Length: 277
Image (cartoon, rainbow, N blue to C red; front, side, top):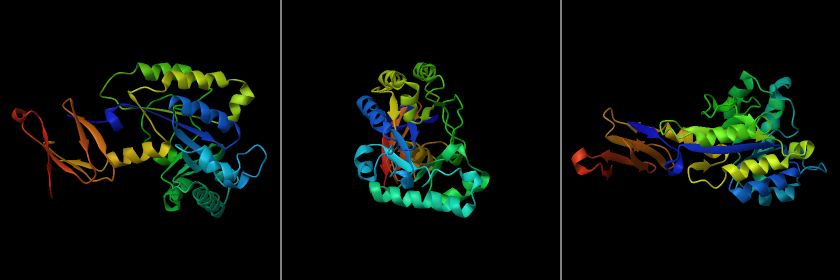
């Protein structure tokens, strides 16, 4: 019996996603960094000259340790635009953000939650690996479609209820994913910075949770699909480019990239031996 886990053999993961790149991100990042919360910030590169937006010269330093993803150059409502404009909105934003961060940008958050089947089909050819919607599920499950990635909840949608529920889970056969989204300026507007402070303090710094960006979650779950087993599950091969963590009959197994491992018979105490191909 094999169960895939998150890095560190954890079965819980937390990721957050915040949009627009306003100056209120500075305060949010201070809180997240204090408690070890990591996530993704979705920026509009064509709006950074606006007074309330974080300037281009601050992007790389401010978001260090987190992920920067696209949110459209001008934050257009994509489902109302010609497909040529959709291409420009995403590809030009991606290029500009890569120049600012020095990183590969591969994520997207749909502006105003607007998308269509045609837009979803287009994204892979633009180098986008996942796209977040604005539709809460209240669930802690993996997305069935990474181009229609529905989060668990907005931070104004029973956040502390969800946090307590998430922390209460202890069934090892499940792999839980808690995904929070929003806009940092909403904390100023609603005068509720205490909510995100309390949340991060409660849920941060725990050994049983993997704190990850959206892209890290996406890429790890995609890599898990590249693990192959023999029918009797005594041969395990990791065809991905990253470490994969799994549990077989209660035993922690770390599969290195490109590695084939053989599970010995029970009388050999379940030890692993790498097979050199």
